Image 1 (cartoon, one colour):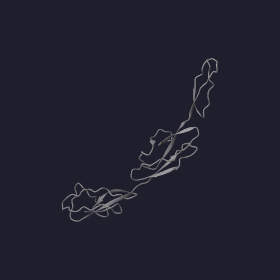
Image 2: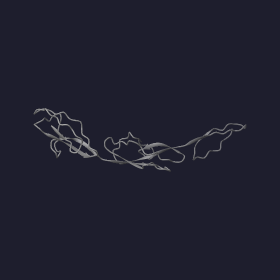
Image 3: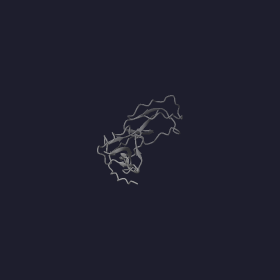
Image 4: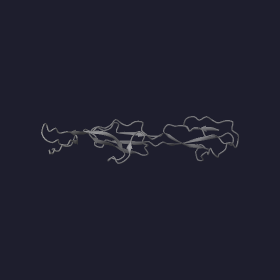
Length: 178
C-alpha cells in the first residue's frame, strides 16, 4: 500500500500485506498551511479509507486529503493606553491556534498593565499564550491604578488622622482631627 501525501510530507509504503488484511494507519503527514483530513481511496478524495474495516485488495494507493488551515487575527486594543502594544495585531494558525508570544505591553501613565482580556471591561476571559483562538478577535488591555498611601503626622499636635490610599490621579481629602 502506497501513501500519496498530495504535497505533504512523505509517508512510507507498507509492503508484505495479503489481500483481505487490514493496513495499519501511518502517522499523519504534515503540509504547511493545511490541515490533514485523512486518507482516501481515490485522488479525488471522495471515499475515506477506514483503517478499522477496509481491507487491502492488491497493490493500491491511498491519497491524503487537505483543507486550507484558517488563519485568525488577534487585535490588541490598548483600552486607553498612552502607548499602544507593539505589534497591534498578530496572526495565528494551524496547528494549535495559540500565539507563541504576546506583543510588547502597552503603557498608560499612572496605571500598571494587568494583562489582556476578551472583554473591554475585564469581565471576559484572560487572554495569554495558552488561549486557543477560534476566530478573529480583539483583546483589551486591563489597567490597575498606581496607588499611594498618604499618612498624616500631627507633628506634636493632638490626634492622628487616618492614612488615605489614593490613586495617583486622585485628590486627598482633608483629614478630620479628633
